[in-house]
Amino acid sequence: MSNKKLRPLLAVRKKCLNCCNKQTKEITHCPVDNCELFQFRFGKNPNNKTKLTLKTIRSKCVDCSAGSLKAIKECWDKDCPLYPFRIGKNPNLVGKRQNNIGILHDSTHQ
Ligand code: SF4
Ligand code: SF4
Image (cartoon, rainbow, N blue to C red):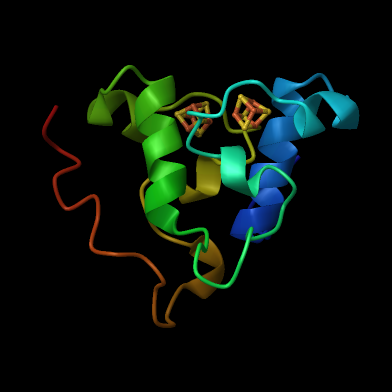
């Protein structure tokens, strides 16, 4: 299944669903409050001041890849909902202003 058109918040929600074997209750009671996605696990920004950024998604990928930027770039899991966003860009905004914060300019370095 292509994740290309997913919005970032929806991608996070799907990632959490995958993480919890589709058990929404488990997402609600997720004990991993230091997970980068924790505040966004319901597919919403928790408040007006705390908004999901592509950097947050990127941080989750860094964690998933044990800090290897090369591993993120070469990630084999194309079904992961975060896959389209893993390099810090939103493919849905190609040709438009990107809502990232200047991350991943160092993607060739480990
Ligand atoms: S916040 Fe992190 S640990 Fe918790 S369900 Fe989502 S991906 Fe899993
Ligand atoms: S896109 Fe790849 S590196 Fe990022 S969370 Fe998914 S599996 Fe891990």
